[in-house]
Length: 135
Image (cartoon, rainbow, N blue to C red):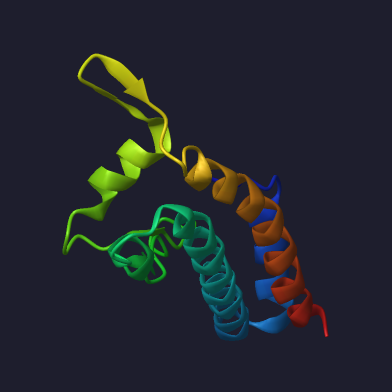
């Protein structure tokens, strides 16, 4: 999932000039982490519909803040690699063919719905987090 905001570099550059680089970085990182936590909860809620052992639910994680060297910071939300749950999530998300018959699992499309829902929430949370810089 990717969210694009036009002019974000200009906004951050103006904030850094006004408030300083370290304070701006601290607030942006906090906003990213808080947004990542919310998205993890949204994904967990959506994949709970096809939960048997709980491994798919329990392995939803977020990464640390990445991409600071490129100038675009990001956090990834996905599945840990311990039990290769991403393979099963893929089957549950898109369906599969078994014995020549197409199977539509109960939670089909759940991750896509979570991604769509999290876009709105991510924009709102990031806006709220960055408004803290204006205070």
